[in-house]
Image (tube, rainbow, N blue to C red; front, side):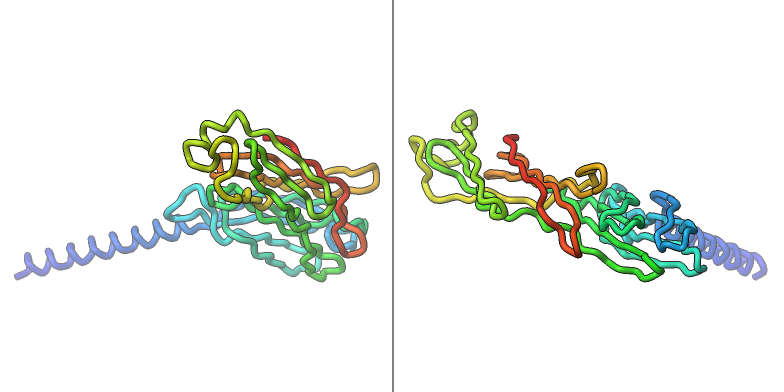
Length: 249
């Protein structure tokens, strides 16, 4: 009888140990990681805040990060948390984009989709007031295939049109039934993607703006027709287009 009881106790101990180990492994896997740590005066009191960019590695997709956020240990003793979206990569730059003399927080999150687009965020903590500023919207454009194995892109903001020769791809398009003897079988639009890259740049000696890049594709995401670059600067609460350029891929 004592032997049977001892076996029950040992079995219970092993099961408990296995459960504890499993819970510990899950907690370790869900552990928040620090992506970056920086210091800067964000509030204007001439004391630095400590700024962390953090996220939780995805349990199923190791390349992905969930629950990405910015954590700020402010000089007033308070901690501020700014939630961001999930993605495969995250970056944070501290730069004065609204030209008020104080550093702002500019974050990029690379999406986990095949398009490779980014979601951008811009925050300020002036006078310890957390404010989310806007970021420039992607350029709107009319983009479509044309007869003669061509494509046309017209930017709505500038009114400029750009024509692209696609004859090098004609065999590919013909096999898919898009063209017959150089003519489109039916009107077909190109795909205008969101930003795949956004970064702060110097517009001149005084001003820092944002430069964004969009990809325009044809019949598939890999069929890149053109790259559209736009440069923006922040003026009185609004983003203004400084320059736009369309380049063949």
